[in-house]
Amino acid sequence: MKKFASLFAFVLLLSLTNCTNKAEEKETAEVFPVTTALQKDTIVTKEYVSQIRSVKNIEIRAQEKGFLQNVYVDEGQYVKAGQPLFRIMPQLYQAEYQKAMAEVEEAKIELQNASTLANNNVVSKNEQRMAKAKLDGAKAEANLANLHLSFTNVRAPFSGIINRLPMKLGSLVDEGDLLTSLSDNGDIYAYFNVSEPEYISYQTKMADRGDVHVNLLMANGEQFPQAGIIQTIEGEFDAETGNIAFRAKFPNPNALLRNGETGKILMNFPLNNALIIPQKATYEIQDQKYVFVVDKTGKVVSRNIKIAYELPDVYVVSSGLSAKDKFVVDGVQKLKENQKVKVKYQQAQQVISSLKLQAD
Image (cartoon, rainbow, N blue to C red):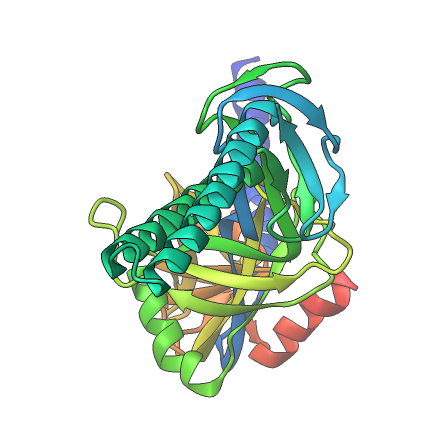
């Protein structure tokens, strides 16, 4: 009975060994595709959070004190330059203007009388000059009263859209109180911050070639149909963030964009001799990217790489890999460090092209 049990155990061990050997033979028989990084000039698109501002956006405030007698517009209404917006109780200023004009007429009569008497040598020429000075003073007071009266009629300084109306009809308005704000949205500005390395790249590779066009991704994820142009860059970097502010101008013919919106600026950066690899060739450990490089002996060795940019299906590598290094494209999850493998080389251009075909 013991001999039978020993024989059974030997046969079982032999069977398991054969199965293991067959599995190892099957594993080592698998051929892994390898390639090298594709080295080429390319363009990457960077996104920047932007704040949208109207080219013209001003606060309209009261210049005189009084009750809000008339409101001629509504919130969100489009108005033309010179169109009446508000009227602040003008009676007091009308009375002051009428009084000033009456004083002007009185001064005119006095000047006329003084001139007649001076010409007849009844009074001295100084009397005539004093009457003339009095008339000039009365005219100045009348002009000032007329100016105050004109301030009671608030008009649009330019064409645009009326915003919130904090003051309602009949409100007591003090000098300097906010009546509304006015936005001209025919053109808009988009402000966004760029890091120092990207600023240098822009200045050396793009600005000198006139490549200053950018696009805008709106809040709903759709691209704004009009392209923008980078107009200005701030004079200095922010010491806290290390960024510098750019300003792009966009035409806004349909007034789709409004002051205060947000979006994302899409700006293209050219890369010379960039190293491009498939994303599927990498694996991640603690937020670090790795590839399996095949050495001269046929063993795979993990290599930590740094990613400069992420594009659809591919990475642009900044360090950790050279153009001559061969790395495994598919099946990296099956490999172990220093494992000897059979490989089949594929052209880098063919590998990258196949990714695009699969995406299509």
